[in-house]
Image (tube, rainbow, N blue to C red):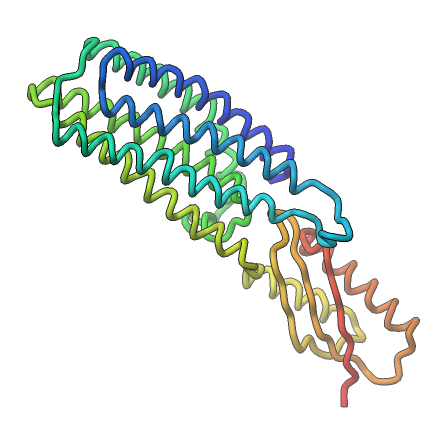
Length: 304
């Protein structure tokens, strides 16, 4: 997914979550529902997270400088990690705290069940139509014939993962909040409102943990996938003068940038002009199969 497509996806999620957050907070204020308040903080956290992602995509487009010779593509990974932190603290912890308080000191929500359900219904329409559907469409386009979990594990674009995970949890959170309100109404026990808030908080913390693990690996310096490394090796060996590829190191510099360093063996006696020509051919072959390999460094060794 290009940076422009990522930005559009984030902007759609930002607009949806901002509107949803306002509606949920109004409903929580009117009704006093713990689950609605938890969902309000959830949407508020999502809104803040979209701003983090926009910051990351903007910074990642900056050109290389003396201080950042490989560019700032990893800004995307940093701000995606901040999303995980903010979602955990600003969403999950707040929801769990509010839920525990409501479970310990239950009291009936005010404002009527119908009002809360209408707000949740409108929120669901916004979430599904404006944010979730475009995210799923983009994910399926990238997934192709692969299974969903493999695609999640192999994608190096945290923007897509964040939007998809947040929107999925948001839809489930709306269902949980509605279920808590309905159970509280049907049983006459307001503790279910607090239980719903606890469930929402746990989901948010779990989602934040998964996102943190995925982005941490990319921040530290995750290599390209085995399939990509095999393609890089095959591209180098397709150049006739290359005898072997002895070492191949890769690292993601950003969602669409891969650093490649390889040691290759050639026949002895090649001139500097020959080596330059061979390097150009290797880079050309690599760009055909792995266009994300934007930084390629080749070291030559003579066959003994």
